[in-house]
Image 1 (tube, rainbow, N blue to C red):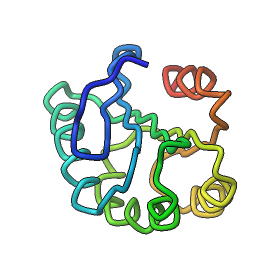
Image 2: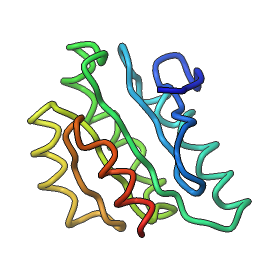
Image 3: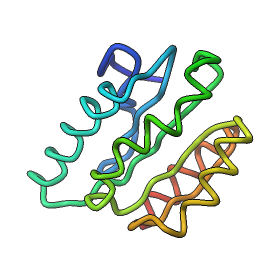
Image 4: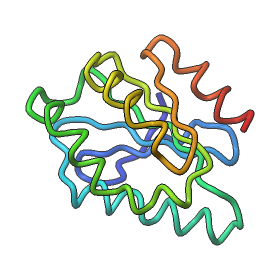
Length: 129
């Protein structure tokens, strides 16, 4: 995966098709890091007069204690979702997958959950929006 450090524990995914943005969570991620990662993505999308289509990966490199707080931390960034056209959550953590499926209908943009081995399908789904 081609990526560059974006914040201390969120890595910006750079090898995505044009118009897609991506973040990969690693280690322990804080609410402040979510905000610092999402603000520039939303600003850039607005400057380009497009909506955000985000691939968000929560893989095995996510610290165990971070996995238990990841959903709460992400909720702190809900304010940015109005700028989103879609969000693909890529994770093999079953509780993240189930929690996302439960709240997705209440969110202002389409959100779908994909297993790690379905990453390419997640990207294809977002690109087709």
